[in-house]
Length: 148
Image 1: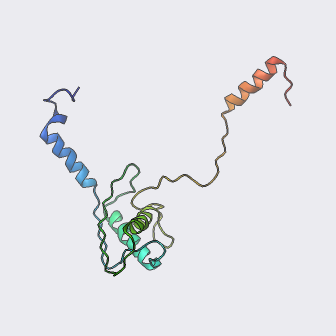
Image 2 (image 1 turned 30 degrees about the vertical axis):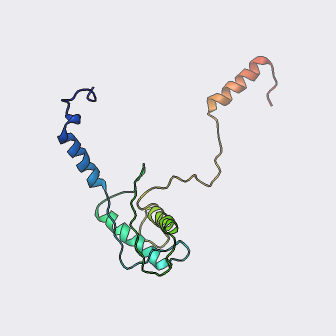
Image 3 (image 1 turned 90 degrees about the vertical axis):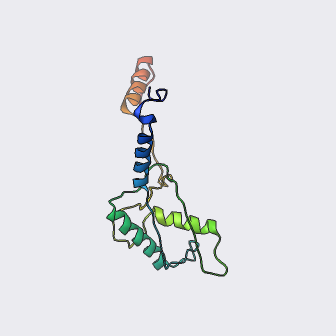
């Protein structure tokens, strides 16, 4: 096993540099100028669309799809208002903007930077497999229970 073998390639400094390089290539650095970060309901829809448009352009240029697994996100916020919105409200708004696309954005994508794992609000119906139903039917028939 390579974990216990100190001479194995995956334990070497070259392998660690290669793994770091792969992780570095997957990073996305995104910078927005000219738009004041605000909470969800106080931010104009035009600013929201502009943030998503800039992010979409960068993702399309790099041929990147939305992340589906775990995601580490670093937000550096700077505001010019005297009484800015609280940072956690700004972060929640930006997470929403980085997730699902807004109507009017020229793309077929449903998600931009990450695919949200919220549960689907539509009710799901559980339909058991046919063999379960057939076993129940055959079992009732064998015991003499009348089946309607």
